[in-house]
Length: 470
Ligand SMILES: *[C@@H]1O[C@H](CO)[C@@H](O)[C@H](O)[C@H]1NC(C)=O
Ligand SMILES: *[C@@H]1O[C@H](CO)[C@@H](O)[C@H](O)[C@H]1NC(C)=O
Image (cartoon, rainbow, N blue to C red; front, top):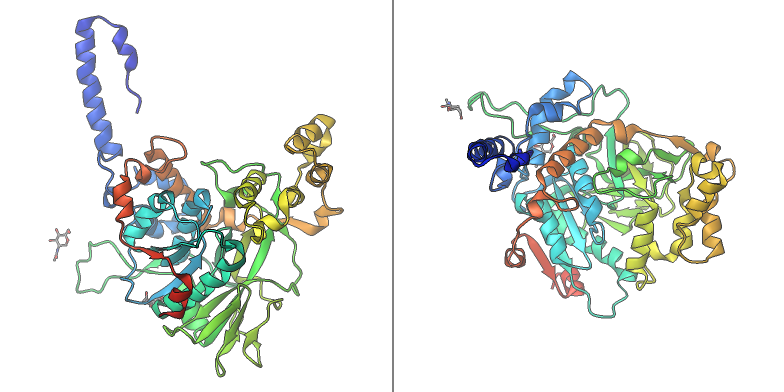
């Protein structure tokens, strides 16, 4: 808010007049741009032109109400006792910075519910996720491990088992993927992968806004893949090409646009969608990258082609998968700084995959830009990021794989997609509502007691028992 504060230097009479003007301005601008009490339901885009700036084509307009309801946390899925089409199970731990972008993206793709299994529970996480938990789109599990547990070695299996037991009965389709993986849905021949409003029944009030949407992802599952029990998803590894840091106001999907070139026979350690048909044990994950379907059920690729014939097991080392329809963009290292700070946080959990490679691994995954390598000043500046005197780490940081231009290619599909642009629109809107950088508007002024008493959080103290269902 730009208040004319210079008015205080004027004479008293003028001052009094200005004060009134200020007050009017204040009242007016509060009313027009920001509710005094930030009620989630009351949040709408400040103006449709803010949102419209992110449109690429007028044909995207009909989906704007969906974006608006996602941004106002008013796209509630049915209650947990009712099945939804698509859920994701994921681990939010240490991912606070990236969750809003990741959740918003997947809401736009058609993921109705997220089951987030936090193995290091905190009020901070509750505060961050509160509006989605209240909306019903996030179910937060707080897994309390006993002091001294080697969490890194076991949490992934726990998450898979809990997801099978607790989530599969309440969803038709579920995937386990990570917060650095973004699902893209498109298919050959589709002119547009946009959700479309379901026309309200003619008997109802036709002026009412559509509250239900048809998502291309749901249609693909229901029409092409309904016979499948497991659908493996191709995962495309992105490279950190010169991203030292992703700031609070920046987007991972926008900054990262360089990935491995993959040939048509690329065997992927992909992720898997399970089609539960609401049954807990119809299929299961053998690990994050493989699945086992009951006899008589099938494993299809995302085009609907049967890819596993015997045993019904999709192997750990993957199979060649189509490069359209369903893909995961995997941002292996979101920024150099992120990799290093995760390492520092997780250094005492030696079995966590993120720490196995250490700081040298962070340096190795960073691909320097031409501009960083061109001059000795540039090289020195980059090398100075290595705080230790590790020669190996310094070398890894400055190193670029031989013939890297043959290995990598530019892929801006996620950045330029409707989901990518709308996610940035929503996050920009939320940031503009906040008062301080790094704090989302809904996090301000929430009392600890309110967080402690939150509904929709499942506190698990005996994890083995929760999995066995005793
Ligand atoms: C339709 O909705 C509008 C606005 O909510 C309301 O004014 C109107 O009376 C409704 N009409 C019918 C037939 O329900
Ligand atoms: C699932 O998606 C299909 C296709 O869009 C839709 O017809 C159906 O109503 C959806 N089911 C639920 C539970 O949302």
